[in-house]
Image (tube, rainbow, N blue to C red):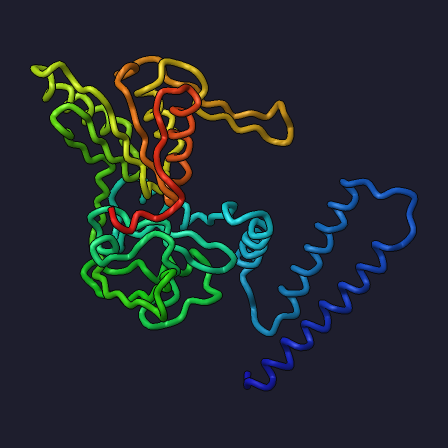
Length: 332
């Protein structure tokens, strides 16, 4: 099919949609005593079904019904807020693999707001981290091609690839003119969720980089190791939990991490519009706990999701002092 005929076909379809939409609007505006919410929903679903049928039967080439419906679902979620999204099977499986703590890529946590891809944080000791990419950078180019209008899933897919291959990223950074360019090499990303050390021989410093599988278990192991190191000097005198630039992760790990420092109570609860529909996560009462050591939690503007849950729970129960601000930690 030539380009002119392609344009004509698309134009005719648009006309069909417009006239159809006008016809539907007239039908809906027909005087009626009362239109219930359920009836209105069924009318809109009927409209959706008719538009779907028009695309399937009148578009200039065959299209996948599955892709059409998937696109409609993504569009529906996009109308809610920047944090709500529809994940198809493939993307969900990739996300599940990422939370296992090992995957191929660059080591970037990204999100999308108003069509712009933002860097949440580079993961410690990964190509992105070593290259100097920072939280709040805006991703604008991948392999010298602009990604304006590209979905989050498409952008992530373009950044994935064979291990050892080079990839170019272009970012816009607040306070800097023009586009900053980075060349990175893909590698197996093995995320070590916990790093720990003694500060001044008496304070336990624990950095939690991500709430992935076994994060709480790794934190428990780190705590026990630091306690053992200080046995002869009276034990640890305080805990510094570093959640800066931690983008979050698994909810059950947020509960387990909180449970290491809390005796009992609610860690987080979610209440829907139906007040009877609640999801309440409680502190786990068994297992290792440190309930007495003075504690400080470090956060910043890139501490999100599960990090906020843990920091909030420890603050609510007056178990820890929260320190930080809403700025990215450029100097840390």
